[in-house]
Length: 238
View 1 (cartoon, rainbow, N blue to C red):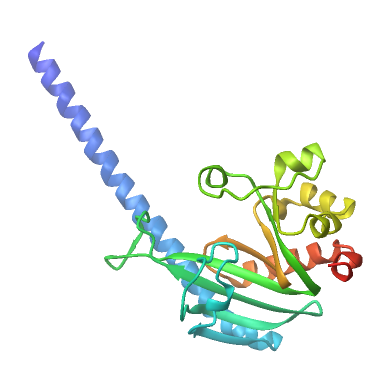
View 2 (view 1 turned 90 degrees about the vertical axis):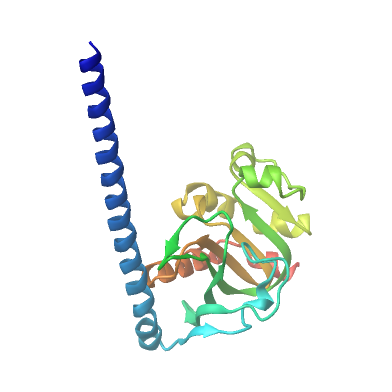
């Protein structure tokens, strides 16, 4: 019996070691593949920008500072770099996009023995006019635990269950959230993962991750589609 137990323990230990080895190899391969895709996307951005007549800077020092307080950006800062900073016109509207990078203490990703920075991609399109601060967010545990700002209920059950509206001007928010806009936010798959924020005369969206040619086009189209559904009077009455 003791011999059988000893053999069983050795088999279990061997299976555990093989499993761990396989896991490490697969993780390395996946990480290497993702890093290759990431760099390929970055490498294509200058060419895409040139083809479209846009401006491109790999690193624009200080240009991200003016967007402190937007989406995932810090509330304040100085000389913050905007990585892969692109400006131009898309569907007749001026736009900007860039990556904000920072070191997160909870990130376990490493690159060349160093921690990989957290990357936030921010996109913005010029709106028809300036408006008060307005954020249309998906509820999350972060909202419950850390964001103590009050939310504005719209009064439509499905929308209020799906989104959290934070605004400095309820009248402006209700003008923006017309029936057409609410229907768009409830039915468009992009809206489920892409928050919106109005600040001044710009409409923003963002996500955690790098910018690629495809994500650039997708997010600019999303912002333009959202603007197309905001009534003109929302801006003129602001």
